[in-house]
Structures are given as C-alpha cells and as structure tokens.
Image (cartoon, rainbow, N blue to C red; front, side):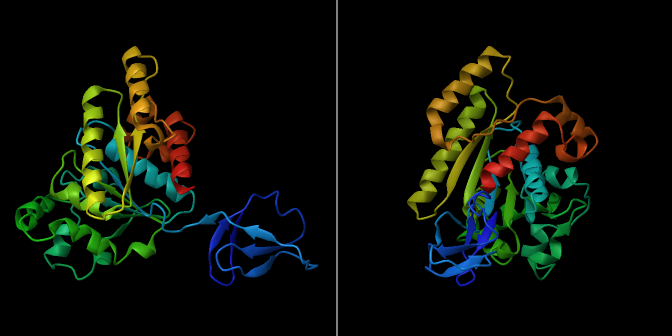
Length: 303
C-alpha cells in the first residue's frame, strides 16, 4: 500500500503485512513527523518510514536507437499503454517525422510541435489529443515536422526546444514517453536532452548493438555537460530458439549488466497481428506473451 506523510506529503510504499492491526503509528523518514495510519489506540511505538517513492523518478522517458526495426515505436506505445493501465497519467510524444506513433493511435491530419513553434497555436496544451485509451494522451507528429530541422538546426540551443516546452506541462503527467526517429540528429538530440531516462531497444543482432553503443556514447557526452540522464537497454523481439540470438544476448548482458532491463520482450506473432488491426497489444490480446511482458516492464520502471 502507499502511505503519504500528512506534513511534507512524501509518499512511501509499505508492504501490506506490516500494518497488521486496525491502524499503526508511523514516522516519516524525511521530516520526522509522526502520524497514525488507521489506528484506534495510539501507541508510543512507531514504524519508521524509509522507502520513499520519488514522484519525479523516470517522469520523462525517451525511446531511442539509431538502428531501425528494433520495435522502438512499438515499445513506446505498448509501454505507455501498460503504464496507463496501472492508473498512471501518460503522455506520448511523437517526435518522428514519419508519424508512425500518431498513425498507430488512429490520428490523421493533426497539428504538431511544428505548429506550436510556428506560433499557429498558443500553448502546447492546444495540440495534445486525448486517445480512446484511458489515461493516455498524445502530442502528435505530421509531415511539417521535417521543416523544424531546416529552420532551427543552426539556432543557438536548438536542442532544448522540446525540453523547454515539456516543462510547461510535465507536472500534469506521471510519465511522458517520447518516440524518436532511427537517427542521431535534431529530433533525437531534443528528445535525449528532455529525458531523465533513455530506453534503448535492441534486437539480438550486431547492427542493433552498434546503435546501442552510439546512444550510450552520446549520453556520456551529455553527462559531461551536467545533464543528468540515465539509460537502460531493452532486449526486444528475442527468439531463444536461434543460437545466434542466444549468443548475442549473452554478450549484451555481459557488456551492460545493471544497465539492462530485467524484462525481455520476446518475439510474438500476436504483436504483428495487433499492428494489422491498429490496436496496442494489451487491447488486442492482454493474455499474450508480449502484453504480459510490456506490463512487467511498466511495473519495473514505475517501481
């Protein structure tokens, strides 16, 4: 269960079996405030709350890999849906000119970040769309996004355009997930600068691993200029039946260790079927292997 200090509003996750009475007196680890949680007979003894939940952890997540075909957009969508199904308020940001994420959510001819920077709309809230899925919204993309690179690439601090705009609405969402193109340039740099966590999806093949290395090197550079960003590697479309994939999987685990997501997304025909009918996998077949794995990934990232 979740307990919130009535003084400093710090939140804690507490195992249900700890509060084994009608109520329990507790003490906040952060402000030392003592308060009672469902207790009829106050006692001098109190349970010290220490395992603080930070609401800012992993608030903005960017999906990125220079290599295409690694389930980047698929992972962005299905992780967002999985978080939304946990009751999290989630915003998806389609920051790819191809607008695949926008199309997967059933939208066409939408306004985008381009219209915002071009001052055709006043606020970023004006271009955010509510999807048909509970707790899930979208900042869409369109073909005009291609003009942003030409117009702003030479501008000083162009890489902060997205971050500065998301700061206006960041507190309205539990998580913001950004989808990026399969390249390292204007859009990807903006998305990396905006993020607190970067997830790098990779299949178990050489070229995809190379893309992971490039993203990790860029993140090291960003850390060198005081941008605090973490990254996690996510193995996708894994087929344990193939010897080559098992070998590369082991190499990835040795190389990245704790930087690797515990959850692995396996190859699943149900995922391809969900694309055909234009549905997230959780709404196409929530009992499928990939649906359960994306839900597990959501629990892993959300703590």
